[in-house]
Length: 234
Image (cartoon, rainbow, N blue to C red; front, side, top):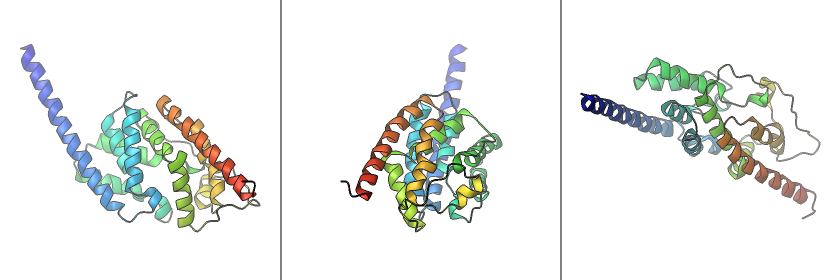
């Protein structure tokens, strides 16, 4: 009798894993299609890096892996920065897709809450929801905003928005509201102080903090070199 129960449980686990794997593959296909012509710092390759970061961090946490995977893959499916500031289009696009895949409402709601609460938004934004799954995906996303790739993404977006690289007369602002942060057109270097250098101390998980420390140090070295070259000292 015990063997029958064990075999039944194993079959259910195998079936669920197959279903989840299929859902993840369908999600990947959908995201690639949606972000086909996206800005280089928010394209499929950004999603893929965040997804890989998510898998690595999730191994060290007691979390629902499926929700983490879906949150990572769909977190930037329609970033408000590229949709006239519309913060509802991303969650709606994700919800419509997940409904089409017959995902349970409980999972959909959790993924939508991750999408709505993952962003930095100037650092003065209070999350309206929290879970270990959100913490894992948020750390994974923030890791892609710092270090060498974070620097590359920062300047790529600055170029995309035709922003000045640096202007010593325009100082960084650390007290911006959410709306001021969204509408800011300050020089790209300012973004290091307004966001990137702040992320190390905003990480949620221990594994995320460890990786962030290394990437943070790299950014500090970059800025030292940048100012030396700007002043003609090297």
